[in-house]
Amino acid sequence: MLWCWLQATMARSAPVMISSIDPIELQAILDRIAGTMAAATERGRVADYIPELADVANDRFGIAVVPVNGEALVAGNADIAFSVQSISKVFTLTLALEKFGGAIWERVGREPSGDPFNSIVQLELEHGVPRNPFINAGAIVIADLLVDGQTPHETVQEILTYCRQLANDEGINIDQDVARSEERTGFRNVALASFMRAEGNIRAPVGHPLDVYFHHCAIAMSCRQLAAAGRYLAAAGDVHGDDARRVSMSCVRRINAVMMTCGHYDASGEFAFRVGLPGKSGVGGGILGIVPGVASIAAWSPGLNAKGSSVLASRAFEELAKATGWSVFGAPGQG
Image (cartoon, rainbow, N blue to C red; front, side, top):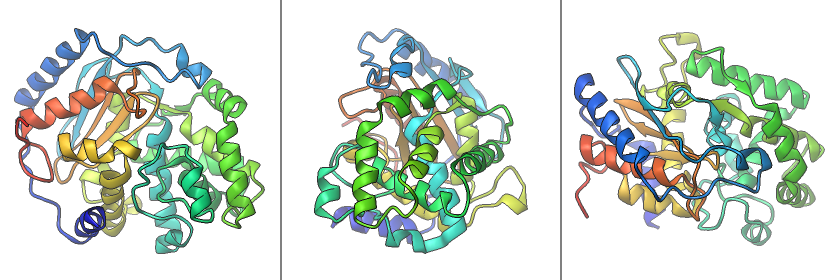
C-alpha cells in the first residue's frame, strides 16, 4: 500500500523544489566522488552471464550531471561508452506512452515486483501480465507494442533515433556484438516471451519483440550521453528546446514515479531509502537518476552487487545526494 500511495502521489503532485548547486562547487563534489571510487577496493562483479559484458574492465568509474539549465559536468571515465542494458527501458517506455498513452497499462502493470528482473514465477501467477515495464517481461511487452505494424529492424531504428534525439547526440549507437551475445544466451527471455505469447499478451511472433528487446538493451552510451538523454525527465519534458519533440508532463511524472518504485527491481526500496531520487539501473553497470527540476545524473562502473546494480555507481549516487541535499524526500541524513 505504501508503494501505491508513493507512486500515485508522485504522478499527481508538482515536483519537490530542490535547490541547484553552483557549478564550481558541484564539479568539486564530482571530482571528490570520482577520486573515492577510483580508490575503492570492493567493486562488485561484472555481468558475466552476457559474454560480451564479462570482458569489461572493472577498474572504471564515470559520472556526469546535466543540469536543466547549464553545461554538463563530468568526472572520471564519463566519456567511455558502455552498454546501457535495462536503462534503455526508460526510453522505450517513454516512446510507448507518447504513442499509445494509458492503453499500455492494460498489458503491463506499474507495481514493484519484489523479484529478480528475469523471474518467471510472478508472471505465471498473474497470467502473463508483467508487474511493471522495467522487469524483462514488462520491457518485452513494451517492445511488442512498439513493433506492431513494422519490422523489428524499423522498430530498433525508431528507438535508436529517439535516444539520439533525447540526447541531442548522433554519436549514440548499438553495440552489435553485445546484441548478438544477448541473442545467443537470452534463453530465459525467450521463455518469458513464449509464456506471455501463450497467455495472449504477446501479439507478434515471439522473435520480433525479442529482436527489438535484445538490440535496444545493447545501446551504448557514455555517462555524458546518458545524462543528456535523461534530461527531459528533469526538465518537465523539454528536449533541448525543441517544442516538436517535447515529452508530455503527464508522461514525465509517470515515468519518474515508476523509476522511483521499480527502477532497481527488488532493490528499488533500498535505492529510494539511501538516495531518494527516481533512478534506473542496468546490468552494464550504469545508473540514470533524476533530480526533478534540477538535473539528470548518470554514473557507471561495471561491477555489480547481488541485485544487479553497480556497486560504485550506487555508492556515488548516495554520496552525491548527501553532498548536495538532492532528494525528493528532503536532504538525506547520515543514517
